[in-house]
Figure (tube, rainbow, N blue to C red):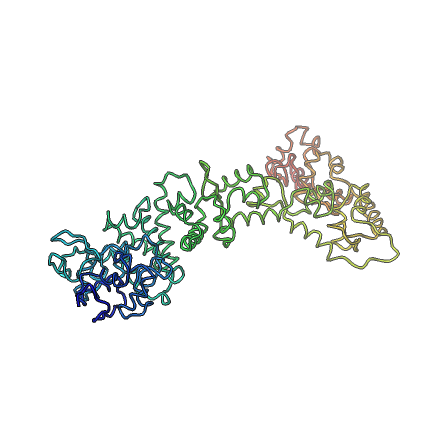
Amino acid sequence: MEPDGIRSLPLRVRPHPDESLPGLLVRTATANRLRGPQRLLRVCGMRRTVAAGAGDPAAMEPLGRLLALPPERLLALSFAAADGTPQILGHRVPGDFVAAGQVRFCPRCLDDACYHRAWWALTLATACPIHAVRLVERCPRCQRTFAWHEPSLERCRCGVRFSRLPAAPVAAEDLGGLRAVHDLLRTPPDRLEGLAAELGVGDTLRLIYGLGCMATGTRRLARPLALAKRHPERAWRVLDAGWRACQDWPASFHRFLDDLRAGAPRRPKRFGLEKAYGPLPEWLGLHAGAPYAERARAALLEHAAAIPVLATRAPAVLARRAALPGDRACMTFTEACKTVGVSDWKLRSFAARHGLFIAGGGKGEPLLLDAAVIRSLADGVKALADRQRACAVLGVGPGTFDDLGRAGLLPPPAAGLAADLLRRRTWPIADLERIVDDVAVRVGRRPRGRAMMSLAEAACALGPLGLGMATVLGAIADGRLRPSPAGRGKRGLRRFAVPADTVRALRDELGAGMRRTLSLSQAAGILDVKTEVAYAWARRGLLPTAARPGERPERGRRVGEADLESFRRDYVTASELRGRSGLGASRKLALTLIARGATPVSGPSVDGARQYLFRRAEVDALLRGA
């Protein structure tokens, strides 16, 4: 029977697991001594090219009857899935990554086993990762480009054996990416791992190719077929660079992003993601919605959010930064102003003084600050009270607050970054509340049938004596006044009340004591010295004094008449001795006494007082000896 009229195949060929369907047709035609694989298609009623016929899902049924193979087995070897989607070895891949009509092969692989590997149809497969040689697609003798209508996979029509063709060697270290893609295509879809299992081989290929082009400096992402034809040596380098960025996702991708950031100074952008990562953000935006683009975009945002010095206004990055732990997050200057609750000019000058800016500051670039520092600063500001708020915490008016300060009952003003930011006198709220707590721990039951006064009313009752809230708090501290609850809904010292009769008794007691004593001004008049000299002697303890309740030691002190007389007996000034026998009336009498051997206990050369003071007994002994 003539070959053209053959209806069934006497010899059947068993396909290899990684063989392509067009290659199987060529081997089948050769085994049955047909002129070419087109004869098989014509028997099945198709007048199409081998590549087109082998890629038609509708042709699997007649070809299966002709080759005595299940149609689904042929479909797995085909370059098209059942729905017409391009595929290689059962893995769906983008159409521009499959060159079904292009025939190329590795001579070393054909020498090992003479059949066409399906993965050679990958557009970017320009080298063999197994033997580290370039794939061949043209006969070196006749310069014919290989095609599927060839009668055999063993020899060219000019007689050259394909397995003996010379192949240019390739550095094996540059084929890591191509080797990984080769392994992915040979792995069944249900046994994939890592990123390929999540995205599939097709999307993984797109991601590898895109990242590889950026890593190798291919500014515009050329079509894979154009890149493989014009620069076949760049194709495997692109795959190698892209695979390095994806092999242990996401750590490898973050290393890839670090490499992109290293080139940021050479990019024309002022700031932002495109300044830091080059064309990657734009490329991901163009392919938004694709699984591989969304996966890479999420990793990119995570990487950018974790770098406080990376200035950007991208809302997605800022939102992720806000969700990071405090020690890693950062915030923009505007967010910092809102967090702390101060004006921008105040925070700007404060941050510049203390070096809090970590990025930005020019040509529209956003200013960035360490979020942990700003949150700590905001907490510090909330813990401070200015004069108005401090009055509210204590439940007193401004005048009473100032009296408490003069009496030394207020805590020291706050210091530190938060106080420096506010640039006004502030007090720690906790210390102010401690004043109220000291009164609260002494609260007893409210006495029945007794009139009560608030602490402010008690201070007013002591007002005629020149006393106030400081005296009331001092009397509570030493037990002379017993506070009771004043009622609910009140704050600070307004929460307490004291018995009215106890306040009147305290007023009478303090008034009687004050009538038996002299103020320092009055004592200075009796001693015939200036008031400031009397204060200096009182501070030294030379002039005994008693403090008024609630007053600081240097204010409001009283001198008892007995103490004053004792002072006059023990000490003497030069002015008192002027005119006595042997001393004369010189204004320099104090210096004369010192020259004669008298030792002053106070004076300009001793403690800075304006007038010299001597011990009376020592001066009398000196005069008797003279």
